[in-house]
Length: 417
Image 1 (cartoon, rainbow, N blue to C red):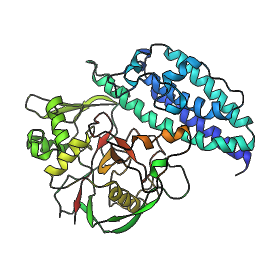
Image 2 (cartoon, one colour):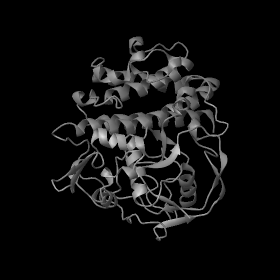
Image 3 (cartoon, rainbow, N blue to C red):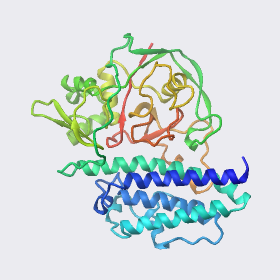
Image 4 (cartoon, rainbow, N blue to C red):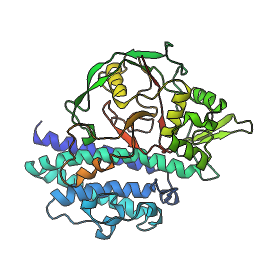
């Protein structure tokens, strides 16, 4: 690729990603953009500013000669967790940042966008080559925050008695799916044991936590051909699933008791305990039996698997199945052996979020991106309906604490053969 084409490709990539974030936030009022409904979420305005801060601090300040921050006072406000890049405003208090205003944050984005465009157009070949991986990292980082913006706004809207919708119209129709079944049923896709390679390979972007590629030994097992549905999970509930301590991991059972969990987050139940509606990006919608169950914690997913006489797949079982079912990537039609691998719900695995053998964080501040979170979290695989197009891949390792419910998380089962 010649230098001109390289510049044009980087410029186009930046414009597309940055514009999509603005499009997601466009329906929000200034009041909506300042909401922080719990310490684990962030205001939409903060997401807009933080993704801009990332480009300003990691790319422009380091690689654009003479660049000065738009407002140096804002740098600690929008730093998330990068110790190497200075102090940070406390995460639980991001909702207190009424200033800068939403309009000022949008103007901040515009200023940094122009500076990025100027840098890409004018930087010499060496400077552009050094910055190009960070520009792509910034785009991938922003795509992560695009989904977080939606999940965080959804949680805030769920606490509003008006239950406002972020998107107009009705949600997409549910794809045909099968119900969960016990081991031995033809619902299972038998998978051979043996040594397989996992992790990112070849060209294209990957986060450092997807590397290095390495070999793992899998035992013979089965992967459910379909995601667990709302109807499946309702049977678990009706069989007393939330009241049977023997199905739950100890920490999960403690959360059930402390928080009074009775159903997935955002389900509305009638007096007889049956679900009538589910809240989502399109507002309150009729409950759909064949929709993939969503907004489950790892603890709920693991309890359901125990109830079903099955288990959750390991992340490596999931990755090997995804590579076999969709050898050309998440956009490929696949073989039909597994449905819903991508684009519906993130799928909890039974794998702790740990480093791969010989993993080393990236040098510099971006080394804090993933490595320091590799404790006390669980890996999810796939992608959700809120994941931006082009952001998913079979080696992608999403991760959250096991009690997380406000993300678009569901499950598929696995079994031993």
